Amino acid sequence: MSDFAQWARQVQERMETALALALPPASIAPTRLHEAMRYVTLGGGKRVRPMLAFAAGEAVGADQTPLTAAACAVELIHVYSLTHDDLPCMDDDQLRRGKPTCHVEYDEATAMLVGDALQSHAFEILSQPGLFPDPASQVEMLHVLAQASGSRGMCGGQAVDLASTGRQLDLAELEFMHIHKTGALIRAATLMGGLSGGPLTSEARASLEHYAKCIGLAFQVMDDVLDAEADTATLGKTAGKDAAQGKATYLSLMSHKEARDYARGLLDDALSSLRPLGDASRRLADIARFIVERSY
Image 1: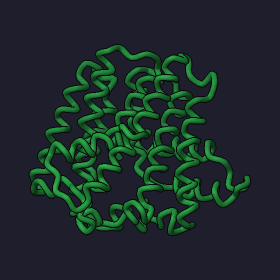
Image 2 (image 1 turned 135 degrees about the vertical axis):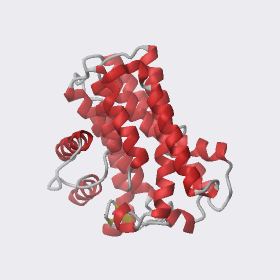
Image 3 (image 1 turned 180 degrees about the vertical axis):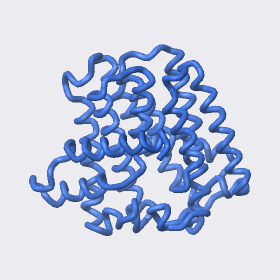
């Protein structure tokens, strides 16, 4: 196992433990809602956003306790978004992380409430008094996560995605959609990790923001490629669904090779942006390479 693979596994295990402790037990009323919240959150996923938070926190020497809280908060927002995206009124998917989606395993009303509850629970975790050494950084993290989750971030990107179904987008339109739908939360995870160590210098913040923009786009490029090339078992979600639904993707604008080359160009740009952070950004560089070279 490579050094990065070992580190990533450690982050995944740490997150599984932290999320299991952070979520309400399934034995507490309302038991069905709490059971469903744990069902969608635990036992799966690459945990890319928590990895980004931990890697950025490592780059600035952040303490593990506030960093873990930030990573949990951003992952709960991500899981809430997946739960809602899978609903029949959105992408209508049956499989997520290798198991039935929440509305299939439970029902649509429960899936809606699960997403709502996970979103509010993320902010409950992140707003705990006394958790962060610098209250101003904690408030800024709350602002970053709220903005990334709303109409100028993830929700706005999903709205554009739904409105664009069956319509050809040019590259600028496609990237506007993905900078919001996928990239906003990736940027939030990276910035929140950096802010877990206290205020960021303007140079460090600019480096992290440009890095996050590049890997957010690269992540979506590779998602589009893998959706067309990989099978359902490998992806843990229904393969080929974007094309079947007439979704705008990078492969509607370029060939598979061109898309992979485009992702590699974004990777090079992301790595260049990390230079001011020096060797401390090693894990961020590893994640960027993983995003472009992954098979799932």
